[in-house]
Amino acid sequence: MRVSKVKELLAGVREHLWENSLTRRQASRAIQSEKRSAITSGDQDLAKECWCLETALYLQDEFIEAFRELKRGTFYDAWCALEKVEIAACSLSEHCFDGDDP
Image 1 (tube, one colour):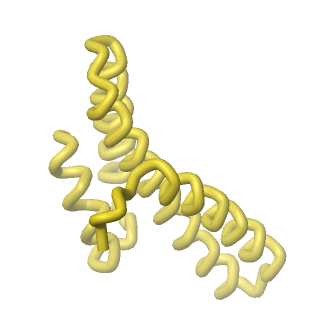
Image 2 (cartoon, rainbow, N blue to C red):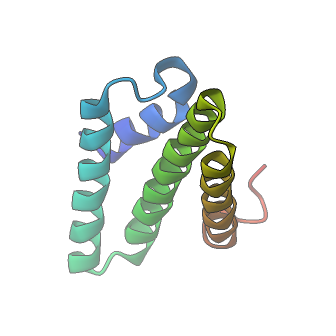
């Protein structure tokens, strides 16, 4: 799976909600592989992009998990998941968005 495909999967989370855990694992492996290659070759921009995608994937997973916890009635677990989302989103926004991005 290529990084461009991972971007499509991340953008299309509403349609699939990671029902297919194989696809999610493939996306994660693709990002990790691309990031390792970027680090090895010294391509900091690509490594940063991969880190951003990795973090976005994590955010989506935790956000979905938070809503699953809410549906189960485990509100504290949902709150904990949303706290993780907030922390990771702050980190992502500090490192991955230029002032020109909407």
